[in-house]
Image 1: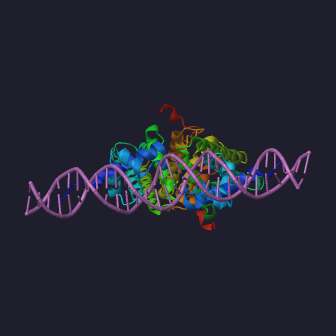
Image 2: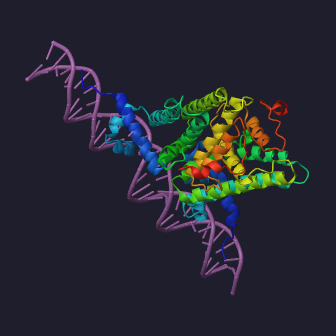
Image 3: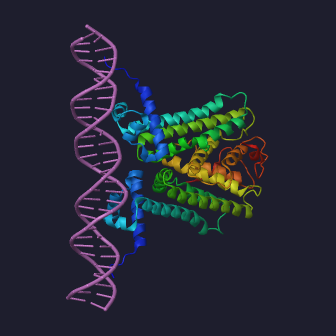
Length: 213
Length: 213
DNA sequence: CACTTTTCGATGCGGTTGCATCATATCAGC
DNA sequence: GCTGATATGATGCAACCGCATCGAAAAGTG
């Protein structure tokens, strides 16, 4: 028997190189040659791990979407019982919106894949699943807040989650483009969350924002 | 003096071909050769009209963003005095969200440009301007509704507009990917608009949606 | 140690890309 | 009707693309 190789870990390693290149050189940066070089392997290895380039891209996309959803889940699992639903939802939305500087990489990669997915159905399917997961996560959080009495129980959690999803998605792409919002993204999110709360104090300006970071 | 050519109209004609190709064959479809063929001209003409490919793309993007903002403005200008602010805002948001089948073209083109813009600053600037225009338009509509007494006057119009912008942006990209929402996009928009109204009836389910279309 | 099976990395191939070049066609002014 | 500036479109070019091929290297087994 010949050399034994852990293909799965190698695929992950290559996928990481794919993401690096898309991040640094845009959607077109992920050529087979450059990916191989970035991963520190030969082109032949890349071709052995993935039958085609599209398969490679699909694998990388699957990984990054799972990682992002996992980050959202982490936010909850780590502190579900201790924190309030409001704090939890705020933190989760901030994480998912990919607006922090250290999340620019993920944001750029997702934008590239989104555009590509308009032409490659398999990529679109992966993104649809990711969005459905995110929406279900948000709906769960809202229902959780309704159980704890923090959120109004006359709300349709599905409708609210389905509203937060595109909001988060839009915040990502706007932040990525360097959009200069008239109001900080954090205030946008807290403003929306305030609308869900049991006793809406409805400040015309959220006063809490000045105390953050 | 030699032949006289209306360069501006020719640039517009070529830009239209660029959009057609991006729409039909994805972000990579806009090669110089294919653009020339689609426009029914030779490659030399395209090269004379635009010094570089990026300049061609920038021109096309400028055109399409201006067209979309104009569509939003039209919605208002045509019926500003007659319609209520609620109706006006609803129609404008639907137009801007690019969720109708006949708007898939614009949505696809914008998605492609958004991804490209992460690597090409000049494109990002054009998109930033477009988003700023859209936000200002929404803010104006909200203030208009406040003047007519339809919207709560304790709202921060800028905050609300800055919230609607990413919402609309996210709806576009979700619709483009074929996301199957648990709740129709129209209900999401009307749900948000209801939150702006003076007398929030707050139905857990918007009853109005069944009567539409 | 020799053998077999898998991996490796380099090279080749057809095709395409954006851009440069250049002979030819086309028209306004004399 | 000539002239010369401009527009045109075909062709060339170097680089790059994804993918296929193949000899050489490697490693577990008899």
